[in-house]
Image (cartoon, rainbow, N blue to C red; front, side):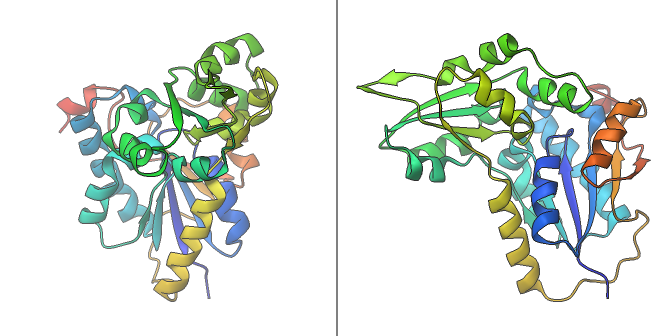
Amino acid sequence: MRGHRILLFDSGMGGLTVARAVRARLPEAELVYAADTAAFPYGDWAEPLLVRRILSVMERLVEAVRPDAVVVACNTASTLALQPLRARFDIPFVGTVPAIKPAAEQTRSGVIGVLATPGTVRRDYTRALIDTYAYHCTVVVHGSSGLARLAEAKLQGHPPARDALRREIRSVYKRRGGGRTDVVVLGCTHYPLLLPELEAASPWPVTFIDPASAIARRVAQLLENGGAPGASGADIAADTVIVTSPVLTAETFEAYARFGFTAHRELAIAAAGRQWLDSQ
């Protein structure tokens, strides 16, 4: 009997960090990865339009993949569209949100940094996590406009310059009340791809929190409680990466293959950028 089919969804390659953790936790599962590359990066989109975009793309993906569960391996998409997705589809959705709670539990200095995308930083959901779990801490939040692109470039063989990384992360390293930042939340699934470089570029040692393993545990729990895999009838084979834009490099597909996604398909869901609105 086949394993559960799991669809992992992101705007780009960042969700590969979550896919790696899910594959390690559930080696028998059939994984399919979908990157909405035509709309990358999600952090640049207006909120109402992005929700419509994600729901529209997910309709096509669910029809093609027939998953038993979907992992929204993107903080921006999760903080904005997770509830509408759960309302629309009758399958489990697991989201990715900034790991504020574990950061508040682990900090010794009481000073926490949160690296995220501009979209995630703006979300009320992120502020609610801080107010609920880290109200007793100093939380320094930074919406980086460049880290996700640097992470994708690294996967394609172009490692980032240390000075560029320092400029992107320096604002979360603060000294407050005799303490200094000692925990940094990686609030975008792209950022763990840069973990060695982030450690080298940090002005002092900190603990970086990557939520991928916790997400994988949650996926395993939901599927165990949900019983046997459903009937597939899928058009997309396991270990396939689906993209929504036609122009991707050989280096990009080689990077996906290193994470186990050895086949690729283009699903013509929409035109790139804001032109998508005109097609609706």
